[in-house]
Image (cartoon, rainbow, N blue to C red; front, side, top):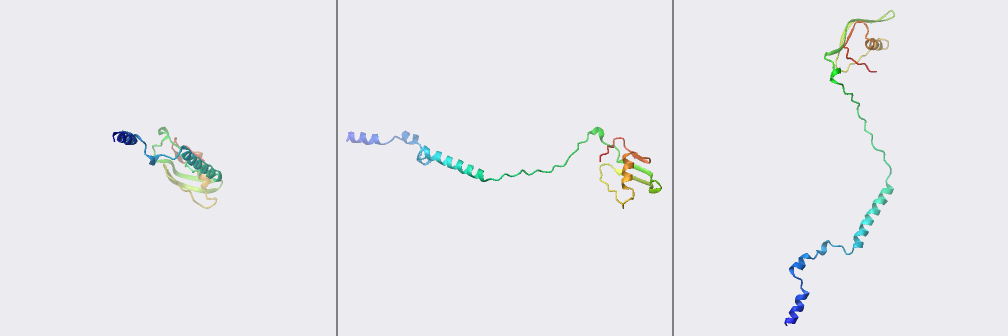
Length: 142
């Protein structure tokens, strides 16, 4: 019987051996199977890539921002002022002793019918005409 026990014991694994053996649940049947799966996935991606259409990227419209240095900042609340301004084109009086102030960093609208002198007023301002007080740091852009 001793001999039979030794043979049976040889067939059994020790606890140490049982722990060291990898779990079959995480093993693949063969290396070829896992490689085939990867190849199939790569082939599927290539196939999808072939059927994709070229798409143009969306171009965002970004606003243009002009940064102004501190040296150019205006310290006056009104960058352009007129005191009793009179504008004439030949004999036609467009503005007669008008006073106004254009506030700093504000939007203004100049409205009026055709030929009322809107453009003439703007040309007069840009050319530093008579009757206007314009800050020396004002920069015109058009």
